[in-house]
Structure formats: C-alpha cells, structure tokens
Length: 131
Image (cartoon, rainbow, N blue to C red; front, side):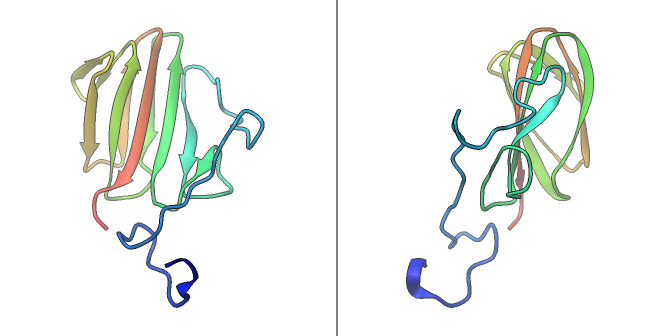
C-alpha cells in the first residue's frame, strides 16, 4: 500500500501493512506496569489505552502474582480467543492446571476465571478468531 493511495484495507485484513508502537524505558509509560496480583494491559488496538498499540484487534495483558489470587479476564471482543501462557508459577483455568511454560487456548466465552498460585507470572494474548 504505502503511497499508492486509495481505500485502506480493513483492520485485521491480511493485505494491511502492520503497524505498532515502540515502548521503551524512556518512551510511553505503562502505568500498570509492575502492578501485583491482577492483569494489566500492555498492548491494545487503541492508542489512548494503557501500554503500546498495534493496528489489529488484539490485546496483551500481563499478570504478576505475589499471592494466591482469584481473578477474571474479560475478552476484548466477542468471538475473540485468548492464548494463556504461564511464564512462572502455576494457575488453574477451567479445571486445567497450568505450570511454568504451559499454555492453553480459550474461546467461546466472554470471560475467563483464574485461580493463580503465589509467585506466578501469566501472559494473555487476546486475538480475533475470524477476520
């Protein structure tokens, strides 16, 4: 596309050029960064939101848990799915126990409930399943 002009492809289109924002220690700050025992947003499709932005209907959240915590995650959009990756520690999600380096895909639900164990770090990647 670039300088060709004309109509831009829709968000999430396979023909759209990727765009994203770079976050560095001296660039845009994430106010929730380092928040404990909850998920905080680190990436979204909205420039006004917390964290960095990308030109796609996707969200990324990180959770640093220093104590056992029950929490929920509300998906960014209907028909999205969430890839859950346990970086450290362990958690129970829908009857499944995930440990360090385990992952799980979840879809067809508006929210996901977590029982997170002490000293855990979890990454959530919330993306559309259909374009």
